[in-house]
Image 1 (cartoon, rainbow, N blue to C red):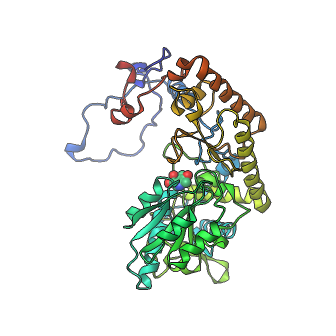
Image 2 (image 1 turned 120 degrees about the vertical axis):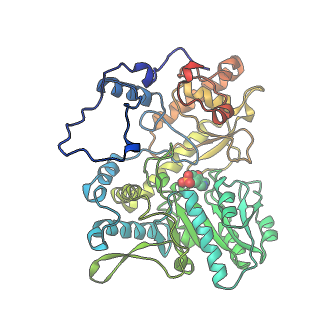
Image 3 (image 1 turned 90 degrees about the vertical axis):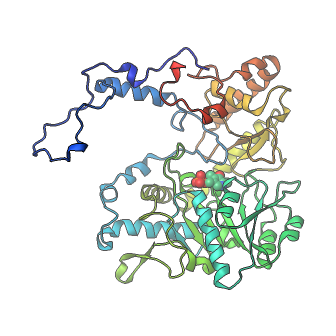
Length: 483
Ligand SMILES: *Cc1c(COP(=O)(O)O)cnc(C)c1O
């Protein structure tokens, strides 16, 4: 349903003869194009002045929520502030103007950055070696599972067909395992939200290739018996993959490699503060323990004699995951973030993220108590189930938009009914957390006294409640105001 405010499309703003670009007069002779390729009429494009065009897109950009404009507690996505220094470094001409086909001698600066980022990540997470190839967390997962597969094959251990996935896992986990040719087998959680160790023991046998664990898990809870879990898995000859998307909760405090994880991906775009969302580029480097290093995707950066840098493809590598050097701009931003915070700063960021989440969890405990009653890490999951009947989590989330907040993640993880998953991140102030809590308290009161306000929310945006299924199935991309 549309609200009154209307944004005209470029077509409606178009006036014949206006133009937003000045194309310089060509000073080279026109090329001779084959007859059939020459256009006889100008293409039908909107015609606008530069200022009209700038205003149009600026206006559109303001209709969106962004971290730069709104609190964005989207659980699991780590929508922290993206420091501008990262943008400055990523735009240095030495990086932006170097062509990926340049010979290694002329790419020394870029290779050095890759090498140092690899070393930093290995150090922060306790791994032997890191490859920067994967383009996203999900691709890192696929990559790590393929490495585990190759490890078993290299030992002639070919009977392992199953991969264990806790029931709180992110949807990409079972998908990655299935893409790598394994059967995903669910491991239930126990009453404290941990992996159920007894059930895990029953599932572990010589048909299991590995387990994929997110720690802290998507409930924002640290696996209290992680050492026993990893020992159980290793005892049956399986390996442990770490989904590192929640590394923001333990960075600088816990090294997953030292806990016993064999391979893990980092979400540079989450933990290491590079802008994400909206399908922009990410990076999901994988760190490997010694026994999996020979299978890392390549090429990755190495330091040669005489302090020069080169590229290396391990002989038994699973191969390439991505063209050229991965999403290079994201790598520059992440390295810039690591250098600007330093060892102590990374730890501080983690501690603040955990503190902020626990503060908010307590502030909301009278209206939306956390599903598991124990201290959380960087995020927590509540339920909209306690709201008056007829009000669901979607209503609460949409009403938050009217109060100027991006909603938390909803209906995930799947093991919590009406889930509301809140991740404030370390970069928010106490005042902002208080304001968010106050808004949710008002919404909880409205839910009792004026439920209609919630059902139709949001009210103040361009569009109010959308039929999201219909929007996905039948997108109207050209001019929604026509219909
Ligand atoms: C974000 C996320 C992923 C997937 O990462 P992408 O970079 O979006 O592919 C996997 N697991 C968890 C727990 C996540 O939060």
